[in-house]
Length: 163
Image 1 (cartoon, one colour):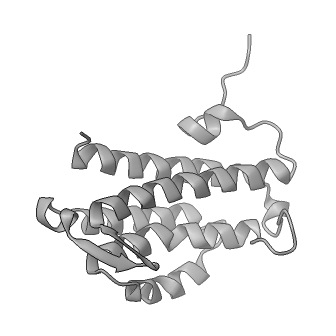
Image 2: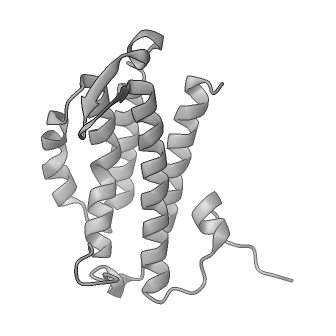
């Protein structure tokens, strides 16, 4: 069984890796999008800057109304202020996460057209953040950045040069 602290540490790791990956985006690739119907890299960063806290807040209250309060901050996110936006999100997520306890984690809520316990929704959020981390990595690779790899996306570190 995972502890609440271990799950929170996994959220923190995903946030750290997302910030690391964002540093790898070339200045001229903020508008890159793999296909016409996908987000640009900047739009993906904007989404990532509040998706975690918005979803966690929704899980806590049991409906999706909290998303609206993060919209202005999301829209104001730039590549340049992204790391700070992620720091704010992590702090807010920690404050919300601290409100979960054994009792309310077992309670079922209906959001996003599904009904699950809050604990299941939190695990789904963690998986979602991992998926969007991978999407950001693939956007960066598709924009022509060749020097990032496995260690960047899974550990949030640059690959040491081979000797």
